[in-house]
Image (cartoon, rainbow, N blue to C red; front, side, top):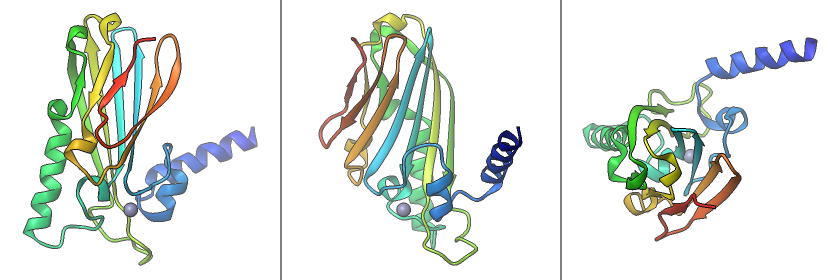
Length: 181
Ligand SMILES: [Zn+2]
């Protein structure tokens, strides 16, 4: 019981900490912060399709510090806007008729440099909730992150589907994640 409470306390601490640097690497739920690699979790449950993206800022924005000037600010805002409206790079197979219900995009590490003066890192998390009218027709999802942001060399896709769990890795030029068995 004590152990469980300790774990809960750790989670609380993790939630209240700024998500940057080494702490982010050790406390975040997903893969480590590796420049060039993005992680995409895809979960399909009935009509509900949830897609979560985690990427180092270096992949998308090109820098991992609070914007120094108007140009960097504009660059960061452009990336966040493209993530908030993902139809240009994230496409469930049209036959499944998936509608985007909600998008939540969270930049981490772009507000302030790390208080301890350590190495700065920043990343961006995005979560998308779709509702698919014909989920059985969801044969694939196209993820064009690497096409759009060439600093992304690899997209690791974790799939949790009704029938199976799987991992697919998209390299340069790949964008299609096959979901059919
Ligand atoms: Zn970094």
